[in-house]
Amino acid sequence: MICEELRLGAVCRPATTQEPRWQASDGSGMLYIAECNLGRGVFAKRAIRKGETILAFGGALIDFAETKRRGPRECMAIQVGPDLYIDTQPPGVFANHSCAPNAGIRNDRDLVALRDIPKGEEIRYDYSTTMDEKSFTMACRCGAPECRQVVTDFTELPGGLQDYYLSRGLVMGFIARRLRRAGTISRWETVGARLAMPAPCPGG
Ligand SMILES: C[S@@+](CC[C@H](N)C(=O)[O-])C[C@H]1O[C@@H](n2cnc3c(N)ncnc32)[C@H](O)[C@@H]1O
Ligand SMILES: [Zn+2]
Image: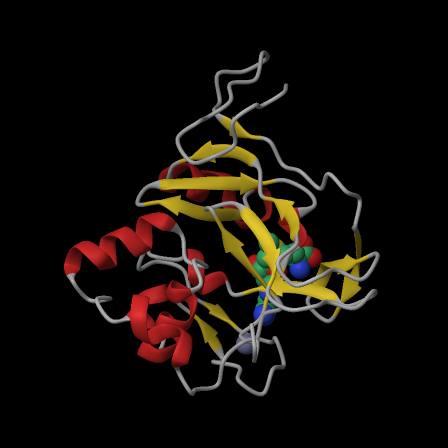
């Protein structure tokens, strides 16, 4: 199945099933999968420059009830809407969480480098930038000095960290739009880039 348009809302339908699906991609072969302290993880096969797109998350688009039905092993889902998830496929399914990430999600599905990433380094993003469901939490073992210990919904992050991610377009669109509608992020467009706080990627 070839998907010409991969942005949110443009959903591919594979020929064999009626399940909507986004195509996963790692077009440039810049990654490998290997074991780490969190099980399997995604690693850089070559040096990756800040701003480069590393992969695109893809997989079946399912609702919350279906994530529960598939269970934790069968469904490694990323939330892309109030009741919409990508049941992610390789390589994105192997991307682990960090509270001090070297990558983040733009355009709802592209994993981009937040700083230069040397060859051999594991690529991790902040799961909270996708989470707005008041359901899932995860004890964090990322090991970063900034570790929050528990991975929760985006709205439970410290305000300054929310600003950091929002100002760089690293938050799922449905979350950013909801917060903007609620009037709780009026500051980030002007203030976010200047925050002096523990940031995931200094200079990112
Ligand atoms: C999308 S999978 C990532 C790949 C996974 N490590 C594997 O071996 O299949 C997400 C799972 O990885 C683990 N994980 C990822 N980041 C973690 C973190 N910072 N702390 C603890 N567990 C983590 C959790 O078991 C989580 O449910
Ligand atoms: Zn952590």
